[in-house]
Length: 169
Length: 124
Image 1: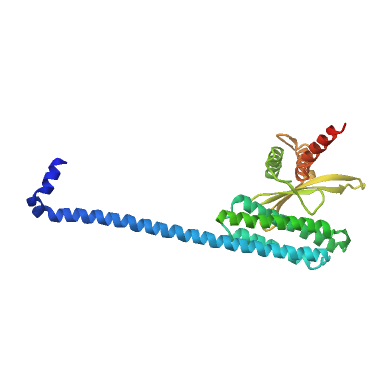
Image 2: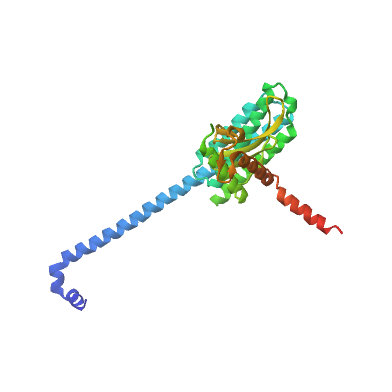
């Protein structure tokens, strides 16, 4: 190291080796710039991923809101005993819930379970109403009981929406 | 003949329910309870059947549904022969136990009984 220091102080050293020193410095500069560029690219990629995740979460929250609106309409129809048209509504809300599942890969398993639970509940209600229809005996259906089940699903999907919002913040 | 996998599933659901690891909830069908997972749901229901003499008896039905609500598999306790046994005993008994445990969990029976007992013990 001392010899190296002495060499740098020697004018003859510079006249003979300025090209080598310049090459080493240039190489070091290139490596440094590459690292900076890579860090910038990584940061840009991470920022893009975060933005995409945020957009997906915003979409999921909007989809949850739409599903809740459909469920509230189902409650009104059940209250009015519009049994003939309800099976289509049940199927539509199941599809809407499934779409949240499919379009939101960032959902945690607990969130996915909440969606699966709601889908299962509407499947069971749909089968119950259809059976009553086939038997021409809608009198066996209780709007109050069915609305109680639907209300719970509204609460759960609303809770899911808030969980997604919290996870994003 | 129902699959062995369904028998394994019944045992596993029993184990997890007994350990308090599953959330069973009521459904729109009476005496039917559902537990949900990320991609599937399991419902256990008690249904009334009758034999050829018109005598009524309870049967237990386990149904597995996918994300679309489509039934993937369904098994009734009487689909298994009486001598079909699993690690914990006859499979028919295991299905009845599963239904009972699911019902107690969904209706919070144990909490209600503890609460009632506490109130009664305060009565002088």
